[in-house]
Length: 419
Image (cartoon, rainbow, N blue to C red):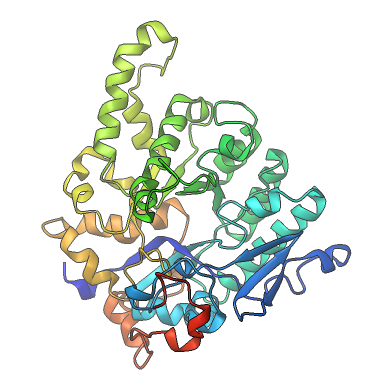
């Protein structure tokens, strides 16, 4: 397939929330308690909520910056692309990248709304989650129909309330909800308990996919405090390796046989070994452990229930015959440091060499459309949804690499980042 003919849907991108997000969406009694977007004395931006100051670090939004300026220092709003937080410019950035659809995970509330889960007043917390979800559905996903796959925050502190929110959002057309890859790491009941059953039941009923993003357990993988940043990036997928094992050895899929879970930003290259390993383990332990998978192999259960995604994973694609190709999807990860924006099609194409066109279509868009009940072609003609068609709409849009060193006084730069 020619790169220009690809149709790309990314199931893992991110939004840097705009300052007006909560305006007009929070009940009057909580209006003064809603998160506030502020500019600090040094010019960097932050959200203030419930005694917390939440900064935006540069690595969260480095699309369009030279790699030599990537870093972990707090950013100013002028230092990030407007497409990070403005839906109109996000669509332009997507068009320039030849990307038709995008699912966007939250930033300042953290991956599964941990910020709100830590709020003492749970009624207040619930109001913030509903306000966030309404903004995401009505503005972020609603402004350009067919371009954004809706994604809801859960109420992590209450599975009954989370189930109610899943139903409410499904009525609006949202069939994806974020969740932690290890709620136990957040001080909550584990996946082995029946605590989460109301949420699983609601998701199964609505066809809502549970999205477990890398890092959503709020516990960075570390071997020692003096390890370099490369260590964290190297071990990050291991967290989803653990989540996959928890899901399989728990009762979740046996109690809810139609439930689907997505392992977001986990890659796929490790999966063939993982699946071989769990089958081997089960073959040895089932005789004495009491584990009973009702005549099925764990790899079969995994292949039925778990959706995967990758950015650039040549080894995984080469070994896709060990996976269920119907559950493999693609991601761009805009605007994070791993993102392939604005040349995602060109980065992806070498991995697709010698792959049949029907498999390419599955991985690049059809699987995402089916799993997330997302139909962009109801709004956008197919011939305008290709890389060529979308990039034609972005003619004149500036995607050049821009240095931001001149926007920050030398004294304010973090050593080792902005030089």
